[in-house]
Structure formats: structure tokens, C-alpha cells
Image (tube, rainbow, N blue to C red; front, side, top):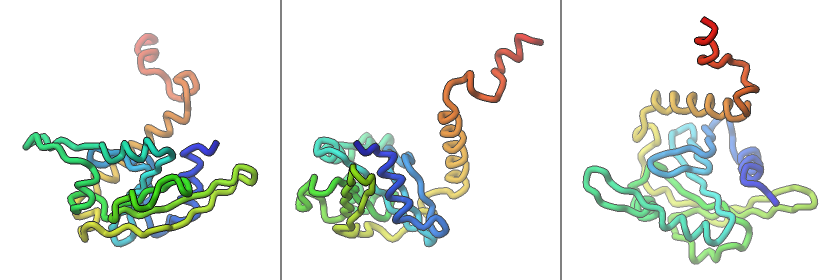
Amino acid sequence: MLKIEELVHAYIHSHCDFEKEIVLTNYFQADWEADMLLIDSEGFSHEIEIKLSKSDFKNDFKKSYLNKKTGEKFLKHDKISCGDYICNAFSFLLPMGMIDHALIPGHCGIIEFYHNADTWETEFYLIRNPKRVHEDPYWKLNDKDVFIRKMALNLLQRKMEMKGKQEELIFKNPFEIKKIK
């Protein structure tokens, strides 16, 4: 069975230009996590959401946001479709034939994939380009300095997660240092 991490790796290495785009995975923006966030050299952003089951796809349309100032509740896809969303474009990445294209809102791009378990190759097919829901570049809506600091923190956290257990870290436990003194 193809893991989501393997799917993301296959997609970004076959469709992204790392010299011209910022490519982030599992990136939190607003109240949602983007499976993939691509920001091009002009600052336009594209969120790609991976759905591997019909139920996961249906649940994406139930995600909501609560405005803390007004108490008003908004559905994620209502915000995207009206352009009141941080990303300029939004697409679904789905297994081939899993969802009838008529069920996917017109503002959403559709990318389907086929994974051959025998050869371990994954092919991607652009079914529909996403519509640009607004013209504001990502950097007009986000502070670039805060973004860079957040990326650095995320990188550090992921590095520590990859290191594994605390015993495997090369850093001394600060509590053990205090005991010695």
C-alpha cells in the first residue's frame, strides 16, 4: 500500500521546480493543514490536498473556521470558493477514478494518480486546473519574516522527530546537567 509520504515525494519530485518554487508539506496555515503548499516565484500559492478515501474527501467539506471576533462559523470550501482564503488556488490529489469529477467544486483543481504496486511507479494526471480565487500574492497576506522563522522552527522540530528517542539525541539533557553541578 502506498503511504501518503511516498505519494507526496513522488509528486513534488516530478512536478515541482525547487529553484523557482517554495514547496512545503504538512504546513499549517489558518486553521488547516495543507498536505502540500506551493508558492511560485511571483508569490502565488497553490494548496494541494490529498484524499485517499471517499469518506476523507467528504469530510474535507465539513471543515470549518470560527471567527473569534464575530463568532461566525465558515466552512473551508465556502471561504475558498469566494476568494476569502490565503491560497490563490486549491486542488485535490486523488486516486484515479475514486471521485466523480462532477462532485468536485468547479474552483478546485483535480489531479489523479495511478500507482503501480508491481513497479512502484506513480503516474499523475492533471484532470482540471484550479481556478485562481483571488489575485493577492501570498506575501501580501503573510509576513515573509514570520513565515521564514516558522519554516526554520518546523525544520528543527522535524529534525528532532527524525532523530527519534531522547536517548539517541546528541544533546545532553539540561536536567542531567543541573544534577552534575
